[in-house]
Length: 114
Image (cartoon, rainbow, N blue to C red; front, side):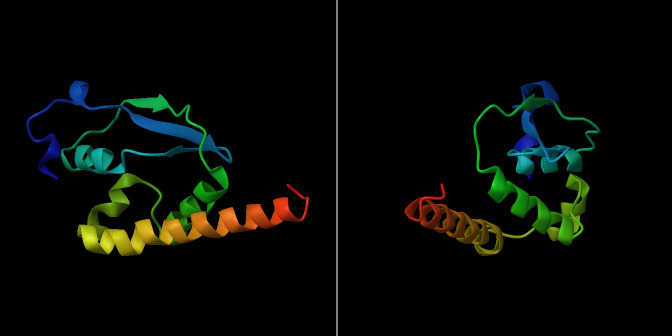
């Protein structure tokens, strides 16, 4: 987490956000935001996410976080893990959902529903 050790807030790329089901969520930059939190920042610069994303998948990912009691960046403080665990516990899990959603969409297209 020493990524912000020698830079100021104005030098940090803004955190992309999007409204999803009436709530603002960050779509990327969680490591930067967490590092800023650890340095005592009370606010971060945000920018509206303009990239089209798989919002059905994001709903699932946000639900996972909520089910684990993670609703703000400070909740990650006691959950810091290494890159190998992160790969298995988050990235691989997300990839499984992405694959399932893609399969579901392809089946709907094959059946003439999509």
